[in-house]
Image (cartoon, rainbow, N blue to C red):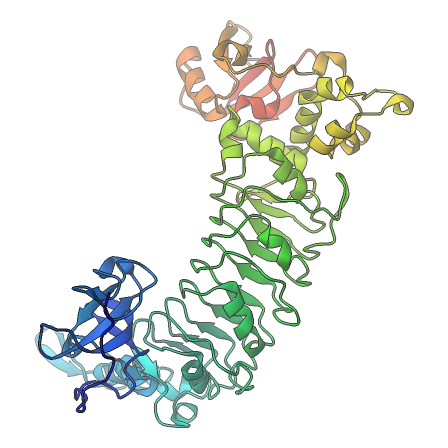
Length: 535
């Protein structure tokens, strides 16, 4: 394949900057980076070779009729466009005037029609005073084609009090241009830079005032790798929240002397290799970590034995691992090692679909992670935890006994294999006592007949009504049970109140108070009696 002559024409096209290669352009609503400027025979005239942010916008890899003009990351991510069709953007100050000053002028000069009279919009100066550019604290220039800072020091004079700046989806091509903007905003605390493509600066600390107060930074979909982020990190000495989803992060290296003040880190929708997350386990203040859609399938904190706590992620309170490849309960057991974890989101993983009943899966998660206060956005109430842990003890009681477990503490020596699979079981036995033989549940293969419960429905406030016995699946939610009762008992349209009693708990009546829970959630068993009342 031939390589074209890169010599530029002696007279540059009037609409092109002299350093066009590497600049960002917008064309028909899409953004890209100029990789080539020149002629493309046999056509006449000047062309721009553009690598598009959205590869679906492109047509080729930078080649045309056997000649390789430029390189793209994606085999279909490039195309040629005429310079007149591409916009190289505007400076920050121009974008500000377009976005804010013109809006204010339009409001002040506007005439409105009231009935048959035309009235000028006078007296609104006080209302729009807060909208004056110099008073702005939040500046939103998303998708405004900002490509440069503009004249030196003018930003400091124009928008001196900015606390939040949104420059998502613009045409800035390097961090040096970003710093030229932000160093003139001495109070800036939040910066939104998602959907940009920024070259790493040659010297990240050359402008120490550029991000001196920055606390929140969003870099979603910026085609960044973790080494590039670490290279830039010295610029953000006080950063607390970093949002870096939808990038090209695969491996994580330990952040030595950078990012140490992070409390929130979003790495979702990055193709991470298994085990990579351990490299950031020493971040001392990290409280909230999003690892959703990263391909996570295994996890091992090898500094802690089963039932012990890891030294990693010492401050981590909230973890999201949704839409991953978690299929083993051993991963959840590892999460129990996190000393501060109280909120977990684990939706859309193969592990949960393996359980025949979503309620059972939730109970197992609650029982295996002892400090959870919220699971999949649901608050874990004390009664939820108690029920989940008691059922867990019953569910695996036979396995515990078979492995060497014993109700006599002196003889209680379950195998190392059982302890590794159920690291909380021993502590739960100490908390609630060992389950009785009659409470132990044999793990039977899934079959509908194994899940049908024979339940007697009784109306205690109307003794003349006959009781009704029905066989219902344990996965049936309370709401559907109530619907069935309206039809069976021909109860008037009133609010139903349900509770149940069991022969194993004589004299105790347990309220069924959540319509969205399955019968199994309340540990209702075959032969139990459900009491039906209404107002």
